[in-house]
Amino acid sequence: MGSFSLWHWLIVLLIVVLVFGTKKLRNIGGDVGGAVNEFKKAMNEGKADPADRKPEQLSDKQ
Image 1 (tube, rainbow, N blue to C red):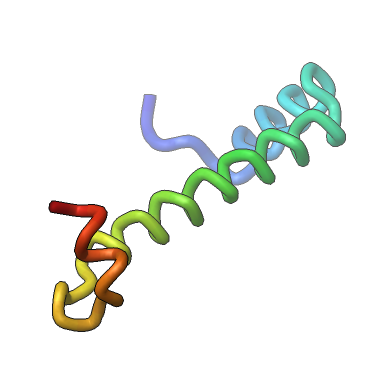
Image 2 (image 1 turned 180 degrees about the vertical axis):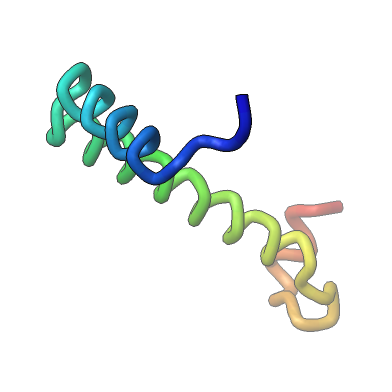
């Protein structure tokens, strides 16, 4: 009941690929990557200093 060995993880990976297929897994990975990028972009926009923003951006916030 200890930790799983490398062979256990390879078998699990093989079963996942057989069940979902590589194309679907690639699409899921792309969707997750896009969501992470959008989240990072939103976090960086929130950290931007108000002095660095353009006047039209400040007027939208008020």
